[in-house]
Amino acid sequence: MEPVAYLDYNATAPLRPEALNAMLPVLQSVGNAASPHGLGRKAAASVAEARGQLAELLGCSAGEIFFTSGATEANNTGLRACLMPASRLITSAVEHPAVLETARALAKERDIELIVLPVDPDGLLSGDSLKRALRTNRPTVVSIMAANNETGVLSDLKMIAEMTHEADAVFHTDATQLVGKLPIDLSVTGIDLLSLSAHKFGGPQGVGALFIRRGLGLPHRPLLYGGGQEEGWRAGTLNVAGIVGAGAAAAAAEANMAAEAGRIHELRDMLEDSLLRGIPAVNVNGARDRRLPHVVSITFRDAPAEAVLAAMPGVAASDGSACSSGAPEPSHVLLAMGRSREDAENTVRFSLGYATSRSEIVYTTEVVKAAVARVREMLASADVAQAARRPEHSGGPVKENTARSWPSGLGADV
Ligand SMILES: Cc1ncc(COP(=O)(O)O)c(C=O)c1O
Image: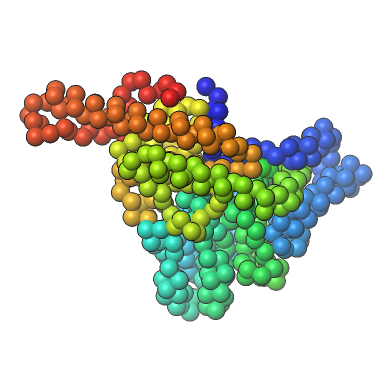
């Protein structure tokens, strides 16, 4: 069944019509942005326009933007560039694997001291722990995400930038989930490097960018060597159509940001309030007053997320982070916030976006209530049946590991 409600924007957003319209003529034409002839120059001009549109969205200059294949590559390129051998990297326990795994790999490769800061139960980083970690004489890079992909919790970028610069360190942020949703002004924040991915704000998949503050003086240590595109930061023929789509999506996100954020915030709150009021034993993860306006991470006690999602095929949402779906481990973000493994496995993330409608939210609210009730009911009766089959456990129902095998009948829409 095709989903009726798409609430998985943090995994990927639908392509904005503005992006599609801008991309179509490019896909239908020819031109390598590095070619000297007219068609090449036209492609290069389109890339320049898109670079300008992204720069406008971020409050930086176009020359500070380097296109990549996405935020994963931007994070890898950025961290690789600023981490000298024998330096230190301070990051947090709730980063996306595109930062955490890169950090771990570089730590091994380059003898880098890796400091992974904890977060509190609301998913917030403490300024004191960062300050303590920054007390050192060794060159240091701080990489802290702008907004968490699972909970939407926002970092205090201004505070982190100030502390980092007081300690003469470099500040990189993975802003993949923030860009295009809330305003950011790189001319005032003090961020040195920033990663983004176009498909999170309505651009095409496979296009991202790394912002590098001019004057940072990083040595060139790209991931890819070759034709020297992107001032040597990222060799390879530019994905002109994708870049044009990213630029158009950035322009549309910027033009509509205030209105979209307000409308989506209202819809998210409507969904959250109805689920909290309508379902017993649920709780919302992450600081309620410091979150992206379009995300809610919600734990349904005694209702594994995998089963809840299977019981509502009409709703596209996510258990944990979609980027790590398929991995058997529960969310490292929720575990870092002190949630139990069971709570982490009982957590669903709903993420709304520019095209989310009120009717999708009304539908989702009803469907989720029914799905959670049904999963709980079926698991409770499975427990009772199992206890009855095992007389040696006559002391009460036995809780089996429900993580991967659901009672039959859960696949139906409810
Ligand atoms: C915070 C964050 N960083 C990085 C990424 C990776 O983005 P991409 O897969 O577009 O490279 C994601 C994807 O979900 C993300 O949420």
